[in-house]
Image (cartoon, rainbow, N blue to C red; front, top):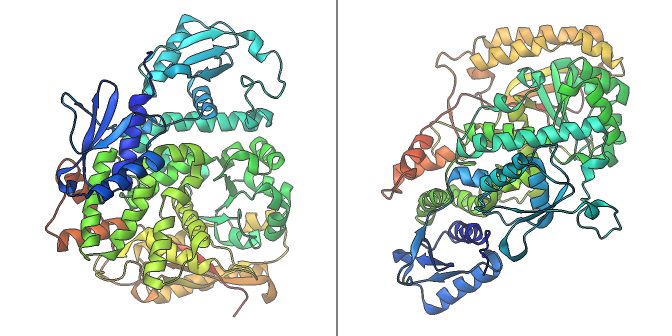
Length: 604
Protein backbone atom coordinates (compact mmCIF):
# COMPACT_ATOMS: atom_id res chain seq x y z
CA UNK A 1 0.00 0.00 0.00
CA UNK A 2 1.25 3.51 -0.86
CA UNK A 3 2.40 5.46 2.18
CA UNK A 4 -0.15 7.97 3.50
CA UNK A 5 1.83 11.15 4.17
CA UNK A 6 -0.93 12.63 6.33
CA UNK A 7 -1.28 9.87 8.94
CA UNK A 8 1.61 10.73 11.27
CA UNK A 9 0.54 14.37 11.53
CA UNK A 10 -3.09 13.41 12.03
CA UNK A 11 -2.12 10.97 14.79
CA UNK A 12 -0.16 13.71 16.57
CA UNK A 13 -3.02 16.17 16.14
CA UNK A 14 -5.48 13.63 17.56
CA UNK A 15 -3.22 12.81 20.51
CA UNK A 16 -2.49 16.42 21.41
CA UNK A 17 -6.15 17.35 21.20
CA UNK A 18 -6.81 14.47 23.59
CA UNK A 19 -4.29 15.43 26.26
CA UNK A 20 -5.46 19.06 26.31
CA UNK A 21 -9.19 18.42 26.26
CA UNK A 22 -9.13 15.47 28.71
CA UNK A 23 -6.89 17.26 31.18
CA UNK A 24 -8.15 15.25 34.17
CA UNK A 25 -6.72 12.03 32.71
CA UNK A 26 -2.99 11.32 32.48
CA UNK A 27 -1.33 9.94 29.37
CA UNK A 28 2.15 8.64 28.68
CA UNK A 29 2.81 9.64 25.12
CA UNK A 30 2.05 8.63 21.54
CA UNK A 31 3.63 5.45 20.19
CA UNK A 32 3.82 3.75 16.78
CA UNK A 33 4.26 0.20 15.50
CA UNK A 34 3.93 -0.85 11.86
CA UNK A 35 1.89 2.19 10.89
CA UNK A 36 -0.55 1.93 13.82
CA UNK A 37 -0.43 4.58 16.55
CA UNK A 38 -1.15 4.10 20.25
CA UNK A 39 -1.91 6.51 23.08
CA UNK A 40 -0.72 5.04 26.38
CA UNK A 41 -2.74 5.72 29.52
CA UNK A 42 -0.49 7.21 32.23
CA UNK A 43 0.30 5.42 35.47
CA UNK A 44 -1.76 7.92 37.50
CA UNK A 45 -4.89 7.01 35.49
CA UNK A 46 -4.47 3.23 35.35
CA UNK A 47 -7.28 2.96 37.91
CA UNK A 48 -9.89 3.91 35.32
CA UNK A 49 -12.75 1.43 35.50
CA UNK A 50 -13.71 -0.54 32.40
CA UNK A 51 -16.82 1.64 31.78
CA UNK A 52 -14.76 4.83 32.24
CA UNK A 53 -12.10 3.56 29.85
CA UNK A 54 -14.74 2.53 27.32
CA UNK A 55 -16.37 5.98 27.52
CA UNK A 56 -12.98 7.63 26.97
CA UNK A 57 -12.26 5.49 23.91
CA UNK A 58 -15.74 6.17 22.51
CA UNK A 59 -15.38 9.93 23.00
CA UNK A 60 -11.93 9.90 21.42
CA UNK A 61 -13.11 7.96 18.37
CA UNK A 62 -16.24 10.03 17.83
CA UNK A 63 -15.28 13.55 18.93
CA UNK A 64 -11.50 13.92 18.93
CA UNK A 65 -9.63 11.54 16.62
CA UNK A 66 -9.30 12.69 13.01
CA UNK A 67 -11.48 10.29 11.04
CA UNK A 68 -9.62 7.45 9.38
CA UNK A 69 -6.48 7.90 11.49
CA UNK A 70 -5.20 4.55 12.89
CA UNK A 71 -4.69 5.58 16.52
CA UNK A 72 -5.95 3.76 19.62
CA UNK A 73 -5.95 4.38 23.38
CA UNK A 74 -4.38 1.48 25.29
CA UNK A 75 -3.30 0.58 28.79
CA UNK A 76 -0.49 -1.68 27.56
CA UNK A 77 1.70 -1.06 24.51
CA UNK A 78 2.41 -3.70 21.87
CA UNK A 79 5.99 -4.95 22.12
CA UNK A 80 8.31 -3.00 19.85
CA UNK A 81 6.34 0.25 19.87
CA UNK A 82 8.41 3.39 19.30
CA UNK A 83 7.77 6.75 20.94
CA UNK A 84 6.59 9.55 18.64
CA UNK A 85 7.83 13.03 19.71
CA UNK A 86 5.24 15.75 20.13
CA UNK A 87 5.14 18.55 17.61
CA UNK A 88 7.42 21.43 18.53
CA UNK A 89 6.15 25.00 18.86
CA UNK A 90 7.84 25.71 15.52
CA UNK A 91 5.97 22.86 13.86
CA UNK A 92 2.70 24.06 15.38
CA UNK A 93 3.34 27.51 13.95
CA UNK A 94 3.72 25.92 10.49
CA UNK A 95 0.47 23.93 10.87
CA UNK A 96 2.02 20.44 10.94
CA UNK A 97 -0.75 17.88 11.31
CA UNK A 98 -3.64 20.27 10.74
CA UNK A 99 -6.47 18.40 8.93
CA UNK A 100 -7.08 20.71 5.98
CA UNK A 101 -10.00 20.49 3.63
CA UNK A 102 -9.08 20.56 -0.06
CA UNK A 103 -10.06 24.26 -0.49
CA UNK A 104 -8.08 25.17 2.66
CA UNK A 105 -5.01 23.30 1.41
CA UNK A 106 -5.29 24.94 -2.02
CA UNK A 107 -5.58 28.39 -0.47
CA UNK A 108 -2.64 27.80 1.86
CA UNK A 109 -0.37 26.59 -0.95
CA UNK A 110 -1.42 29.54 -3.09
CA UNK A 111 -0.21 31.84 -0.31
CA UNK A 112 3.05 29.94 0.22
CA UNK A 113 4.10 29.47 -3.41
CA UNK A 114 5.52 32.33 -5.48
CA UNK A 115 3.11 34.68 -7.28
CA UNK A 116 4.26 33.54 -10.74
CA UNK A 117 3.47 29.88 -10.04
CA UNK A 118 0.97 28.50 -12.58
CA UNK A 119 -2.62 27.94 -11.49
CA UNK A 120 -3.03 24.59 -9.81
CA UNK A 121 -5.34 22.26 -7.94
CA UNK A 122 -4.30 19.85 -5.18
CA UNK A 123 -5.37 16.22 -4.83
CA UNK A 124 -4.45 13.77 -2.10
CA UNK A 125 -5.80 10.50 -3.46
CA UNK A 126 -4.46 7.38 -1.70
CA UNK A 127 -2.51 9.44 0.83
CA UNK A 128 -0.13 11.09 -1.64
CA UNK A 129 -0.11 14.66 -2.97
CA UNK A 130 -0.73 15.59 -6.60
CA UNK A 131 -0.62 19.04 -8.13
CA UNK A 132 -2.58 19.47 -11.32
CA UNK A 133 -1.07 22.56 -12.95
CA UNK A 134 -2.21 24.67 -15.87
CA UNK A 135 1.22 24.72 -17.55
CA UNK A 136 4.60 23.03 -17.22
CA UNK A 137 6.75 24.14 -14.30
CA UNK A 138 10.50 24.61 -14.09
CA UNK A 139 12.83 22.45 -11.94
CA UNK A 140 13.15 25.42 -9.61
CA UNK A 141 9.37 25.61 -9.20
CA UNK A 142 9.22 21.85 -8.60
CA UNK A 143 11.83 22.26 -5.87
CA UNK A 144 9.76 25.14 -4.46
CA UNK A 145 6.77 22.80 -4.16
CA UNK A 146 8.84 20.17 -2.33
CA UNK A 147 10.28 22.73 0.10
CA UNK A 148 6.82 24.18 0.77
CA UNK A 149 5.37 20.75 1.50
CA UNK A 150 8.32 19.91 3.76
CA UNK A 151 7.71 23.12 5.73
CA UNK A 152 4.13 21.94 6.23
CA UNK A 153 5.41 18.65 7.63
CA UNK A 154 5.03 16.40 4.57
CA UNK A 155 7.94 14.11 3.75
CA UNK A 156 6.89 13.54 0.15
CA UNK A 157 7.70 14.51 -3.41
CA UNK A 158 4.53 15.78 -5.04
CA UNK A 159 3.38 14.31 -8.33
CA UNK A 160 3.00 17.07 -10.91
CA UNK A 161 0.38 16.66 -13.66
CA UNK A 162 0.15 19.24 -16.42
CA UNK A 163 -3.45 19.63 -17.60
CA UNK A 164 -4.27 22.93 -19.39
CA UNK A 165 -7.77 21.72 -20.21
CA UNK A 166 -8.70 21.79 -16.55
CA UNK A 167 -8.95 25.59 -16.80
CA UNK A 168 -10.51 25.73 -20.25
CA UNK A 169 -13.98 26.54 -18.96
CA UNK A 170 -15.97 26.87 -15.80
CA UNK A 171 -19.27 25.02 -15.92
CA UNK A 172 -19.95 25.39 -12.23
CA UNK A 173 -18.65 21.93 -11.34
CA UNK A 174 -15.03 22.43 -12.35
CA UNK A 175 -13.03 21.87 -9.19
CA UNK A 176 -9.89 23.29 -10.78
CA UNK A 177 -11.28 26.80 -11.25
CA UNK A 178 -10.97 28.21 -7.77
CA UNK A 179 -13.82 30.39 -6.57
CA UNK A 180 -11.59 32.89 -4.75
CA UNK A 181 -13.63 35.90 -3.60
CA UNK A 182 -10.54 38.10 -3.63
CA UNK A 183 -10.15 37.72 -7.40
CA UNK A 184 -13.19 39.94 -7.95
CA UNK A 185 -11.90 42.74 -5.70
CA UNK A 186 -10.36 45.99 -6.98
CA UNK A 187 -6.68 45.50 -7.81
CA UNK A 188 -5.29 47.73 -5.06
CA UNK A 189 -7.40 45.95 -2.44
CA UNK A 190 -6.51 42.51 -3.76
CA UNK A 191 -2.79 43.31 -3.65
CA UNK A 192 -3.11 44.71 -0.12
CA UNK A 193 -4.82 41.52 1.04
CA UNK A 194 -2.13 39.39 -0.61
CA UNK A 195 0.50 41.44 1.21
CA UNK A 196 -1.36 40.86 4.48
CA UNK A 197 -1.33 37.09 3.86
CA UNK A 198 2.37 37.14 2.90
CA UNK A 199 3.12 39.05 6.07
CA UNK A 200 1.30 36.39 8.10
CA UNK A 201 3.29 33.58 6.50
CA UNK A 202 6.53 35.40 7.33
CA UNK A 203 5.46 36.17 10.92
CA UNK A 204 4.04 32.86 12.18
CA UNK A 205 7.34 31.54 13.51
CA UNK A 206 8.11 34.74 15.38
CA UNK A 207 4.59 34.90 16.80
CA UNK A 208 4.02 31.34 17.95
CA UNK A 209 7.45 29.73 18.33
CA UNK A 210 9.68 32.62 19.36
CA UNK A 211 7.03 34.35 21.49
CA UNK A 212 7.41 37.89 20.16
CA UNK A 213 5.94 40.59 22.43
CA UNK A 214 6.69 43.65 20.29
CA UNK A 215 3.49 44.93 18.70
CA UNK A 216 5.41 47.59 16.75
CA UNK A 217 7.20 44.84 14.84
CA UNK A 218 3.93 43.90 13.16
CA UNK A 219 2.38 47.33 12.54
CA UNK A 220 3.96 49.09 9.61
CA UNK A 221 1.55 52.02 9.76
CA UNK A 222 3.21 55.15 11.13
CA UNK A 223 -0.13 56.02 12.73
CA UNK A 224 0.30 53.05 15.09
CA UNK A 225 3.33 54.78 16.61
CA UNK A 226 1.15 57.66 17.78
CA UNK A 227 0.65 57.53 21.56
CA UNK A 228 -2.26 59.98 21.62
CA UNK A 229 -4.90 57.87 19.92
CA UNK A 230 -8.23 56.24 20.62
CA UNK A 231 -10.02 53.23 19.15
CA UNK A 232 -13.72 53.05 18.26
CA UNK A 233 -15.32 49.76 17.25
CA UNK A 234 -18.14 50.61 14.84
CA UNK A 235 -18.68 47.02 13.65
CA UNK A 236 -21.50 46.31 16.10
CA UNK A 237 -22.73 49.67 17.42
CA UNK A 238 -23.43 53.10 15.95
CA UNK A 239 -20.83 55.59 17.25
CA UNK A 240 -21.22 59.26 18.14
CA UNK A 241 -19.94 62.45 16.55
CA UNK A 242 -16.39 62.03 15.22
CA UNK A 243 -15.61 65.62 16.23
CA UNK A 244 -15.70 64.55 19.87
CA UNK A 245 -12.84 62.11 19.33
CA UNK A 246 -10.86 64.54 17.14
CA UNK A 247 -11.09 67.18 19.87
CA UNK A 248 -8.98 65.08 22.20
CA UNK A 249 -6.95 62.60 20.17
CA UNK A 250 -4.43 63.03 17.38
CA UNK A 251 -5.40 59.73 15.74
CA UNK A 252 -8.83 58.09 15.84
CA UNK A 253 -8.68 54.39 14.97
CA UNK A 254 -11.95 53.02 13.64
CA UNK A 255 -12.95 49.39 13.18
CA UNK A 256 -14.48 49.69 9.74
CA UNK A 257 -18.24 49.10 9.83
CA UNK A 258 -19.78 46.18 8.00
CA UNK A 259 -21.00 46.93 4.50
CA UNK A 260 -24.70 46.87 5.42
CA UNK A 261 -24.28 49.39 8.27
CA UNK A 262 -21.75 51.76 6.67
CA UNK A 263 -24.24 54.52 5.87
CA UNK A 264 -25.69 54.46 9.38
CA UNK A 265 -22.22 54.53 10.98
CA UNK A 266 -21.08 57.46 8.86
CA UNK A 267 -24.28 59.24 9.89
CA UNK A 268 -23.47 58.50 13.54
CA UNK A 269 -20.00 60.00 13.06
CA UNK A 270 -21.75 62.97 11.41
CA UNK A 271 -19.32 62.90 8.47
CA UNK A 272 -19.48 61.86 4.85
CA UNK A 273 -17.21 59.56 2.87
CA UNK A 274 -15.10 62.33 1.31
CA UNK A 275 -14.47 63.90 4.73
CA UNK A 276 -13.27 60.57 6.12
CA UNK A 277 -10.95 60.12 3.15
CA UNK A 278 -9.48 63.59 3.69
CA UNK A 279 -9.03 62.96 7.42
CA UNK A 280 -7.25 59.69 6.58
CA UNK A 281 -4.96 61.50 4.15
CA UNK A 282 -4.16 64.02 6.90
CA UNK A 283 -3.28 61.18 9.30
CA UNK A 284 -6.10 61.96 11.75
CA UNK A 285 -8.07 58.74 11.28
CA UNK A 286 -7.01 55.17 10.61
CA UNK A 287 -9.02 52.03 9.95
CA UNK A 288 -8.66 48.41 11.02
CA UNK A 289 -10.40 45.38 9.53
CA UNK A 290 -10.71 42.66 12.21
CA UNK A 291 -12.67 40.42 9.82
CA UNK A 292 -12.32 39.33 6.21
CA UNK A 293 -12.40 42.06 3.58
CA UNK A 294 -15.54 41.01 1.65
CA UNK A 295 -17.81 41.88 4.62
CA UNK A 296 -16.70 45.52 4.54
CA UNK A 297 -17.63 48.36 2.12
CA UNK A 298 -15.38 47.46 -0.81
CA UNK A 299 -15.86 50.71 -2.71
CA UNK A 300 -14.87 52.86 0.27
CA UNK A 301 -11.91 50.59 1.01
CA UNK A 302 -10.62 50.94 -2.54
CA UNK A 303 -10.84 54.75 -2.32
CA UNK A 304 -9.17 54.67 1.09
CA UNK A 305 -6.22 52.66 -0.22
CA UNK A 306 -5.81 55.18 -3.01
CA UNK A 307 -6.03 58.24 -0.74
CA UNK A 308 -4.11 56.96 2.30
CA UNK A 309 -2.80 53.38 1.94
CA UNK A 310 -0.94 53.46 5.27
CA UNK A 311 -4.12 54.34 7.16
CA UNK A 312 -5.48 50.78 6.87
CA UNK A 313 -4.46 47.77 8.98
CA UNK A 314 -5.83 44.50 7.70
CA UNK A 315 -6.89 41.49 9.74
CA UNK A 316 -3.66 39.49 9.89
CA UNK A 317 -1.49 42.43 10.94
CA UNK A 318 -4.00 43.37 13.61
CA UNK A 319 -4.06 39.74 14.75
CA UNK A 320 -0.27 39.61 15.02
CA UNK A 321 -0.04 42.87 16.97
CA UNK A 322 -2.88 41.75 19.26
CA UNK A 323 -1.19 38.43 19.98
CA UNK A 324 2.14 40.13 20.73
CA UNK A 325 0.66 42.79 23.01
CA UNK A 326 -1.69 40.42 24.83
CA UNK A 327 1.18 37.97 25.34
CA UNK A 328 3.33 40.77 26.75
CA UNK A 329 0.62 41.58 29.26
CA UNK A 330 -0.65 38.01 29.89
CA UNK A 331 1.92 35.38 28.79
CA UNK A 332 -0.38 32.47 29.62
CA UNK A 333 -2.67 33.40 26.74
CA UNK A 334 -0.34 32.54 23.87
CA UNK A 335 2.50 30.46 25.30
CA UNK A 336 5.38 29.63 22.95
CA UNK A 337 5.26 26.01 24.16
CA UNK A 338 4.39 22.74 22.50
CA UNK A 339 1.15 21.00 23.43
CA UNK A 340 2.74 18.57 25.88
CA UNK A 341 4.26 21.52 27.73
CA UNK A 342 0.91 23.29 27.61
CA UNK A 343 -0.64 20.23 29.20
CA UNK A 344 1.87 20.67 32.06
CA UNK A 345 0.54 24.19 32.54
CA UNK A 346 -3.02 22.82 32.66
CA UNK A 347 -1.93 20.23 35.24
CA UNK A 348 -0.58 22.99 37.46
CA UNK A 349 -3.70 25.11 37.11
CA UNK A 350 -5.97 22.08 37.60
CA UNK A 351 -4.21 21.03 40.80
CA UNK A 352 -4.90 24.45 42.28
CA UNK A 353 -8.49 24.52 41.08
CA UNK A 354 -9.35 21.07 42.37
CA UNK A 355 -7.71 21.84 45.69
CA UNK A 356 -9.77 24.97 46.17
CA UNK A 357 -6.66 27.16 46.11
CA UNK A 358 -7.98 29.51 43.48
CA UNK A 359 -11.33 29.28 41.72
CA UNK A 360 -10.10 31.61 38.99
CA UNK A 361 -7.62 28.99 37.78
CA UNK A 362 -10.57 26.76 36.83
CA UNK A 363 -11.77 29.45 34.40
CA UNK A 364 -8.34 29.45 32.77
CA UNK A 365 -8.25 25.65 32.55
CA UNK A 366 -11.62 25.50 30.85
CA UNK A 367 -10.67 28.18 28.36
CA UNK A 368 -7.18 26.91 27.52
CA UNK A 369 -8.28 23.29 27.12
CA UNK A 370 -10.77 24.44 24.49
CA UNK A 371 -8.61 26.84 22.46
CA UNK A 372 -5.03 25.56 22.71
CA UNK A 373 -5.57 22.46 20.52
CA UNK A 374 -6.12 24.65 17.43
CA UNK A 375 -4.66 27.96 18.58
CA UNK A 376 -2.24 28.64 15.72
CA UNK A 377 -4.41 27.69 12.77
CA UNK A 378 -7.53 29.39 14.14
CA UNK A 379 -5.80 32.77 13.71
CA UNK A 380 -4.89 31.81 10.16
CA UNK A 381 -8.59 31.20 9.52
CA UNK A 382 -10.16 33.99 11.60
CA UNK A 383 -7.51 36.73 11.54
CA UNK A 384 -7.95 39.34 14.27
CA UNK A 385 -11.43 37.99 15.05
CA UNK A 386 -9.51 35.06 16.53
CA UNK A 387 -9.04 37.23 19.62
CA UNK A 388 -12.71 36.69 20.45
CA UNK A 389 -12.07 32.94 20.49
CA UNK A 390 -8.52 32.79 21.84
CA UNK A 391 -7.94 35.98 23.82
CA UNK A 392 -9.34 37.15 27.14
CA UNK A 393 -12.97 37.26 25.99
CA UNK A 394 -13.98 33.91 27.49
CA UNK A 395 -11.95 34.69 30.62
CA UNK A 396 -13.86 37.95 31.04
CA UNK A 397 -17.20 36.16 30.60
CA UNK A 398 -16.12 33.50 33.12
CA UNK A 399 -15.01 36.06 35.71
CA UNK A 400 -18.25 38.04 35.36
CA UNK A 401 -20.28 34.87 35.81
CA UNK A 402 -18.19 33.49 38.69
CA UNK A 403 -17.65 36.62 40.74
CA UNK A 404 -20.64 38.76 39.73
CA UNK A 405 -23.22 36.05 38.87
CA UNK A 406 -24.08 37.60 35.50
CA UNK A 407 -23.84 35.86 32.14
CA UNK A 408 -23.01 38.61 29.65
CA UNK A 409 -22.01 36.45 26.70
CA UNK A 410 -21.38 38.07 23.29
CA UNK A 411 -21.48 41.69 24.52
CA UNK A 412 -18.62 41.02 26.94
CA UNK A 413 -16.69 38.97 24.36
CA UNK A 414 -16.75 41.73 21.75
CA UNK A 415 -15.90 44.41 24.30
CA UNK A 416 -12.92 42.41 25.57
CA UNK A 417 -11.62 41.83 22.05
CA UNK A 418 -12.05 45.56 21.35
CA UNK A 419 -9.94 46.43 24.39
CA UNK A 420 -7.27 43.97 23.20
CA UNK A 421 -7.29 45.52 19.72
CA UNK A 422 -6.99 48.98 21.26
CA UNK A 423 -4.01 47.84 23.33
CA UNK A 424 -2.40 46.43 20.18
CA UNK A 425 -2.76 49.87 18.58
CA UNK A 426 -1.47 51.63 21.71
CA UNK A 427 -4.78 53.47 21.91
CA UNK A 428 -7.31 54.46 24.56
CA UNK A 429 -10.47 52.44 24.06
CA UNK A 430 -13.57 54.57 23.51
CA UNK A 431 -16.69 52.48 24.13
CA UNK A 432 -19.86 53.53 22.36
CA UNK A 433 -22.83 54.90 24.27
CA UNK A 434 -26.14 55.57 22.59
CA UNK A 435 -29.83 55.59 23.49
CA UNK A 436 -30.06 51.80 23.21
CA UNK A 437 -26.86 50.56 24.81
CA UNK A 438 -23.94 51.73 26.95
CA UNK A 439 -20.77 49.70 26.38
CA UNK A 440 -18.87 51.70 29.02
CA UNK A 441 -19.27 49.35 32.01
CA UNK A 442 -18.24 46.36 29.87
CA UNK A 443 -15.17 48.19 28.59
CA UNK A 444 -14.08 49.31 32.05
CA UNK A 445 -14.40 45.75 33.37
CA UNK A 446 -12.39 44.45 30.40
CA UNK A 447 -9.79 47.22 30.73
CA UNK A 448 -9.22 46.15 34.32
CA UNK A 449 -8.71 42.53 33.28
CA UNK A 450 -6.31 43.58 30.52
CA UNK A 451 -4.25 45.73 32.91
CA UNK A 452 -4.10 43.18 35.70
CA UNK A 453 -4.37 43.14 39.46
CA UNK A 454 -2.74 45.41 42.00
CA UNK A 455 0.38 43.77 43.32
CA UNK A 456 -0.87 43.60 46.90
CA UNK A 457 -4.28 42.24 45.94
CA UNK A 458 -5.06 38.90 47.55
CA UNK A 459 -8.78 38.46 46.90
CA UNK A 460 -10.33 40.29 43.96
CA UNK A 461 -9.30 39.12 40.50
CA UNK A 462 -10.56 42.40 39.01
CA UNK A 463 -9.98 45.93 40.29
CA UNK A 464 -12.48 48.76 40.05
CA UNK A 465 -11.51 51.36 37.46
CA UNK A 466 -10.84 54.82 38.86
CA UNK A 467 -11.55 58.22 37.31
CA UNK A 468 -8.21 59.73 36.31
CA UNK A 469 -9.51 62.82 34.54
CA UNK A 470 -13.02 64.12 35.06
CA UNK A 471 -15.05 66.47 32.93
CA UNK A 472 -12.97 66.85 29.76
CA UNK A 473 -14.98 68.68 27.13
CA UNK A 474 -15.29 67.51 23.54
CA UNK A 475 -17.28 68.76 20.59
CA UNK A 476 -20.65 67.41 19.48
CA UNK A 477 -21.54 69.95 16.83
CA UNK A 478 -21.79 70.37 13.08
CA UNK A 479 -18.63 72.43 12.60
CA UNK A 480 -16.62 71.56 9.48
CA UNK A 481 -14.82 68.41 10.57
CA UNK A 482 -11.62 69.30 8.70
CA UNK A 483 -11.52 72.62 10.57
CA UNK A 484 -11.95 70.76 13.87
CA UNK A 485 -9.06 68.46 12.92
CA UNK A 486 -6.88 71.48 12.14
CA UNK A 487 -7.67 73.36 15.36
CA UNK A 488 -7.43 70.36 17.72
CA UNK A 489 -4.29 68.34 16.98
CA UNK A 490 -4.31 66.07 20.06
CA UNK A 491 -1.16 67.53 21.61
CA UNK A 492 -3.01 68.69 24.75
CA UNK A 493 -4.32 65.20 25.51
CA UNK A 494 -0.92 63.67 24.74
CA UNK A 495 0.74 65.76 27.44
CA UNK A 496 -2.13 65.16 29.84
CA UNK A 497 -1.86 61.34 29.45
CA UNK A 498 1.89 61.52 29.97
CA UNK A 499 1.49 63.57 33.13
CA UNK A 500 -0.98 61.04 34.54
CA UNK A 501 1.16 58.02 33.70
CA UNK A 502 4.23 59.60 35.26
CA UNK A 503 2.42 61.02 38.33
CA UNK A 504 4.27 64.25 37.65
CA UNK A 505 1.60 66.83 38.57
CA UNK A 506 -0.41 67.62 41.66
CA UNK A 507 -4.17 67.33 41.82
CA UNK A 508 -4.49 71.12 41.62
CA UNK A 509 -2.16 71.40 38.63
CA UNK A 510 -4.07 68.66 36.83
CA UNK A 511 -7.37 70.46 37.36
CA UNK A 512 -5.88 73.68 36.03
CA UNK A 513 -4.59 71.84 32.97
CA UNK A 514 -8.02 70.32 32.28
CA UNK A 515 -9.57 73.77 32.76
CA UNK A 516 -7.19 75.22 30.17
CA UNK A 517 -7.95 72.47 27.66
CA UNK A 518 -11.69 72.89 28.20
CA UNK A 519 -11.34 76.62 27.64
CA UNK A 520 -10.04 75.92 24.16
CA UNK A 521 -13.17 73.84 23.42
CA UNK A 522 -15.48 76.54 24.81
CA UNK A 523 -13.86 79.23 22.67
CA UNK A 524 -14.47 77.09 19.58
CA UNK A 525 -18.06 76.20 20.48
CA UNK A 526 -20.04 78.50 22.80
CA UNK A 527 -23.30 76.53 22.65
CA UNK A 528 -23.29 74.18 25.65
CA UNK A 529 -25.77 71.88 23.93
CA UNK A 530 -23.11 71.10 21.33
CA UNK A 531 -20.44 70.07 23.85
CA UNK A 532 -20.17 66.79 25.74
CA UNK A 533 -18.15 65.71 28.73
CA UNK A 534 -15.74 62.79 28.91
CA UNK A 535 -13.95 61.08 31.78
CA UNK A 536 -10.75 59.11 31.41
CA UNK A 537 -10.70 56.01 33.62
CA UNK A 538 -8.06 53.42 34.39
CA UNK A 539 -6.25 51.51 37.13
CA UNK A 540 -3.90 54.26 38.22
CA UNK A 541 -5.43 54.96 41.61
CA UNK A 542 -7.56 57.99 40.81
CA UNK A 543 -6.84 61.71 41.23
CA UNK A 544 -6.18 61.38 44.94
CA UNK A 545 -3.01 59.38 44.30
CA UNK A 546 -1.73 61.20 41.23
CA UNK A 547 0.67 63.28 43.33
CA UNK A 548 1.72 60.33 45.51
CA UNK A 549 5.43 60.04 46.26
CA UNK A 550 5.25 56.25 46.24
CA UNK A 551 5.77 56.09 42.46
CA UNK A 552 3.73 54.38 39.77
CA UNK A 553 1.54 51.49 40.84
CA UNK A 554 2.60 48.05 39.62
CA UNK A 555 0.05 45.58 38.33
CA UNK A 556 0.29 41.85 37.99
CA UNK A 557 -1.16 40.33 34.78
CA UNK A 558 -4.21 38.31 35.72
CA UNK A 559 -2.66 35.05 34.48
CA UNK A 560 0.50 35.68 36.50
CA UNK A 561 -1.63 36.56 39.52
CA UNK A 562 -3.29 33.15 39.32
CA UNK A 563 0.12 31.45 39.20
CA UNK A 564 1.37 33.48 42.16
CA UNK A 565 -1.51 32.23 44.28
CA UNK A 566 -0.70 28.68 43.24
CA UNK A 567 2.98 28.95 44.08
CA UNK A 568 2.21 30.53 47.44
CA UNK A 569 -0.42 28.02 48.47
CA UNK A 570 0.53 24.75 46.81
CA UNK A 571 3.47 22.41 47.33
CA UNK A 572 2.79 20.54 44.10
CA UNK A 573 4.74 22.07 41.21
CA UNK A 574 5.03 20.82 37.66
CA UNK A 575 8.35 19.34 36.63
CA UNK A 576 10.36 19.43 33.46
CA UNK A 577 11.35 22.16 30.99
CA UNK A 578 8.14 24.12 31.45
CA UNK A 579 8.83 24.85 35.15
CA UNK A 580 11.26 27.73 34.61
CA UNK A 581 8.96 29.28 32.02
CA UNK A 582 6.00 29.19 34.42
CA UNK A 583 7.99 30.60 37.34
CA UNK A 584 9.29 33.46 35.20
CA UNK A 585 5.79 34.39 34.09
CA UNK A 586 4.37 34.13 37.61
CA UNK A 587 6.43 37.01 38.96
CA UNK A 588 6.21 39.57 36.18
CA UNK A 589 4.61 42.96 36.74
CA UNK A 590 3.66 45.82 34.46
CA UNK A 591 3.16 49.56 34.77
CA UNK A 592 1.20 49.77 31.51
CA UNK A 593 -2.39 50.70 32.25
CA UNK A 594 -5.25 50.25 29.79
CA UNK A 595 -7.25 53.47 29.60
CA UNK A 596 -10.92 53.75 28.71
CA UNK A 597 -12.73 57.00 27.88
CA UNK A 598 -16.17 57.30 29.45
CA UNK A 599 -18.45 59.58 27.42
CA UNK A 600 -21.29 61.29 29.23
CA UNK A 601 -24.64 61.72 27.52
CA UNK A 602 -24.76 65.50 27.99
CA UNK A 603 -23.31 68.36 29.97
CA UNK A 604 -23.87 68.10 33.72
